[in-house]
Length: 277
Length: 289
Image (cartoon, rainbow over all chains, first blue to last red; front, side):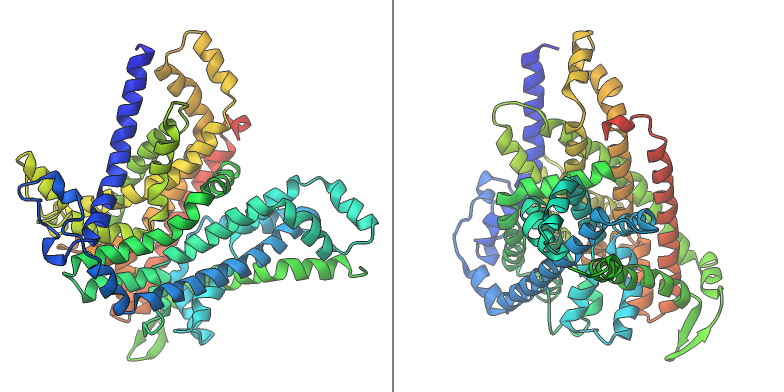
């Protein structure tokens, strides 16, 4: 195969893939700016005008926020923000301990931590409901935040990074009389900023995308997070297509705003865990 | 600092380990425990293995297990193959790659429920896909309400959403293969196809196995699309075990049966994870990690 033909084939394949990824999204975005009765216009017979927001209106977005979507976004930001902040502290501390201290049974405990992240949250969501109801947290924000704070993957990411920091740094700081917390804060944390971003993004996105657990843990639906809110919206306003699209667009937009500038860290964090896993 | 290392260890490790113990390990134990009980009119009674025995003779469970296995038999190889194809494109060094890389990453920012809502409307009989297919004289199809299509529509949606995520791991694995190896093979006269099969894929084996098993784990427990799109129907064609368990516990209030199903699911998964560790530790291409 000539190099030119090979290049052409690669570009062709990439264009097909990009097309499949983008087209449904594009249609959703364009249609969210259409009035509801024009949602399926230009499809039968099919014309490319179906991909344009014509006639243009923002009524779908106005209606979504009138129906309380703003509060749902705020709720989710609160849950995801709290989980990220607490998760960074808790998991970085554990990663630090695993990286720097020797203790009996360390590799076994670390192994269990690593295995714990291979078992997805969905596997334990239903029994977790029993645990959380024993704690009396059903329908409380704590039910959404606390169980998600400790995260095996985040511990592992910090462990992996801290382990690579030369031990001399630690020893030197010890000799200068710094305590372990000072060393963590002023030596290790500044070095590990990329890991903090990777782990933080992971915790945030995990909460932003959570569906089954909030569905089970908040049965009263007084405090709705975004994915559940969107699904409820779908049940309630079955044929308000443009509003459903608008809700979906907003729900996708917020993590995108974080992921696009920070994609490098997210990709590195995930890729690193997979290779070592 | 005069704190002894023990106090230090407890202080640093306790929050994370307690969290994992209470919210990860304990629920597994609790599922086992609760699967031995049954709740009738709010009264919990110990029934031993009756919930499990009940499952064995329950045609609903077997049908759901068949749906789950068939679903996984299709979706996992499909997702890993497509993710690998995407990853091989992602690492190309060609002009304009930055744009394609960004486009390939888009579905990562999209949650499964969002993907479900968008695709649900795209797949309506009067929706975008049927419109586009109509232009070439096909359809309209009832993608979500026909028992012949619904499961495959869910597979398509989950695949659309999932493969970018798995691509990232494979890209990481590909970038860890020293370029000199491929270069040497090229100088020896190996074609691109031969280099893929004889050099890249064997060296990528640990990553591929990791992705395959992690993907199986996710897909075994897939819930949101079934809940949001089909409710297990039409005619039970999308009723995966995860949804069957949810219905048992949270719709019909039979927690014992729900937990028994969850225990079966997790047991199947543990077997898969165990197989993964076996295969990974015997992987000959360890250097590539």
